[in-house]
Image (spheres, rainbow, N blue to C red):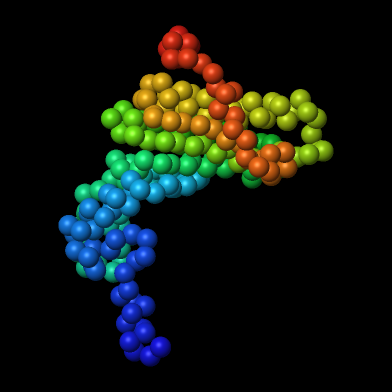
Length: 203
């Protein structure tokens, strides 16, 4: 492509997020608000991916090619309207010693998210929590599999009710995808049936 092609590759606008280097800060700020409010985002619970995405000013996506980084003043969590939270548990299929640590981390990540979500934002938010597992098909007894499934549900139970009843998320559902048993994700939201009054009583 020659020199012109090289310059274009280095300076072409980002196709998914409005870069203030090309559009200016005012337009980029307004466009970022629309970008977050108009799309569905699917984020894993691994490490700090979820909160890093939701709390990081989008200007950081372009900090490498700007001498002075001036925040856009946009926090994605304030504008996101549709969020899919993917709870990764399939890597625990063949481990035993670390399962409790993984479940505790899942609980902590979801609880942290709930703590950062303000009720005035929650009323506009639709959330899908996707449980991702891979339970062995023949190497474990059914009682062991049931126990592991219940432990996974228990890890998300408190954050789920906190989001639904305490914070008032507009809509929240849980689907379960297992690489062996539930190849097509099934809706398991009905597993969590406590009413607001019942939740207040047990919490």
